[in-house]
Length: 127
Image (cartoon, rainbow, N blue to C red; front, side):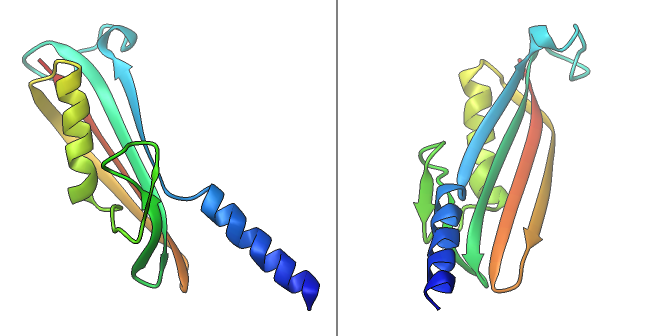
């Protein structure tokens, strides 16, 4: 019985350590082999934002914080397009982009009781 309890607590601790994160990846125009990402304007960068978290059925437990990128949010539903779109827009503005083209998102959900959700949003920043 004690081994099962220790295993369960270890599994829960690992889930807390490795869950809930927002990350932003940027490939700047110079690294795109001189390929234009839009029909008009100057290519700034290709941007990718990922967020994921753990939910109990539909109740958010731990997810990536969209207010402080790189940290966790507790009991907030941030794994959705409405939460990650402002992050990619802010990153585009920070790099000097005036338009975001070809936004695409991918949403995944896995599990039954404890559900792992993830969203991936990518787009092209153009000036």
